[in-house]
Image (cartoon, protein in one colour):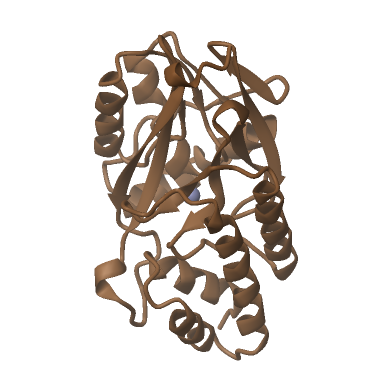
Length: 282
Ligand SMILES: [Zn+2]
């Protein structure tokens, strides 16, 4: 049942423009962000965790999944942000036997992102003509599903970079597919957070480390970064730095400059600028 030679996973990244594009300054070679997608597969079947943002990116994702020559049985979505689930429709068109699922809370959050205000007014403006027709994940009954007898466990992680997020724990691989509970060498999206939810997020990352995983796949990472479990502690440390620096900063620019000095080479400084503006409104 746990013959790991026939049970493994692969990670694919896709790079896109960030969402916050009015940076006062910052490293120009790092103004992009990656979404990760993880395929967990056995001898015949596979489950995909998260999709990408644009029509073109998701078309590439479909080709990548096809290259494994497995039956896609599940598309699991970690949380309700559009850049993680907008590919469901294209994946289901290519793999009609698959089921797109998410925890009930994440599935409910996803509905908001499909409203015209968000789909067209937000995402569509940032990626004109590139946002797919939206198909939503179904709410999963319970907190686990199976792949060829291996358990895939959904862990509720509460408010991380948004409300009602989750991670997927695969005990037989000691693998955490973290969604946005972990970031890997990428500025974290803090625009929706408060000091209380940042601390809650940090503690949640530490709780996942307590599972003693051998690999942790972040929802956002640098393409070549290792999926090292240490990113959970790094994610927590970044959040606590953000709060400490915010407490000691008067303006968004001040907070941004000082965090950038602490983390000069993380990808996507736009996420930091967006978070700084939210924490220190003009
Ligand atoms: Zn994300």
